[in-house]
Length: 246
DNA sequence: CGCCAGGTGGGAT
DNA sequence: ATCCCACATGGC
Image (cartoon, rainbow, N blue to C red; front, side, top):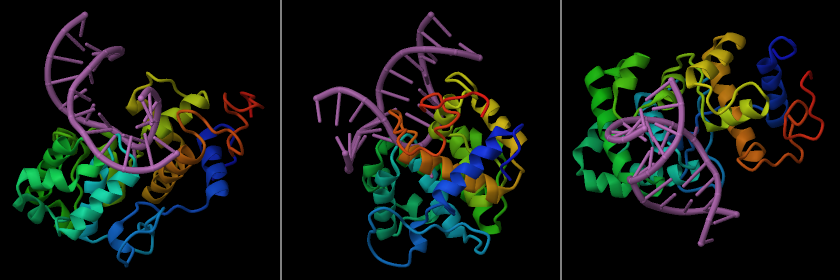
């Protein structure tokens, strides 16, 4: 995958994979088998050799909500607190007072709203029986949940349930903008369609692609771009050797 | 200090 | 449909 000039997003994938290597998202604190803290990264978990437990699925959904407009660093601390207090299950989470839950996720910001979102999501998963049978909810059902929008719904579907839906986030939008493939007003669904029409519809591939975009977003494609050494310099409007064709 | 980080819902235009 | 805003912490 990667060298079809008609499909620029295949080439982008190949370039990012070559530059950063296999990512293997989603980062799961419960799979690192240790106590504490490791500076940059928890081990990645979701790859084709390992399927997820109900508890891991729930942790992913919680992380997807907590990371709304928030750095993963801050989310990770909150997840650690939740784990230490044994609140990383829908039942346990619903059993504590809202104020206590909010305090636990304080570091992730918007903690009152996020506490409410976590409670609603917990009820949703319990009542739908989604975690037990690993039977994914529909996208539409997820979107009916207060606090779950397009990106969060797709993240949960893709990373917690292995449904092949492409996740579009701020990094994705920014990258496509700089590559001249979208602009600030391109709707979520259009960007998603762009990827899904070009990239073979496989959950592993979508998961890896999104992870690579996030890595690229952190290393180079920030709001203020760091074009030095950027693997996508060629073909990017911010790069020195911009050329629309290549 | 100010800006930024893997958004979302509610309200006004 | 499309803007505008509140929501909030921690790192640089």
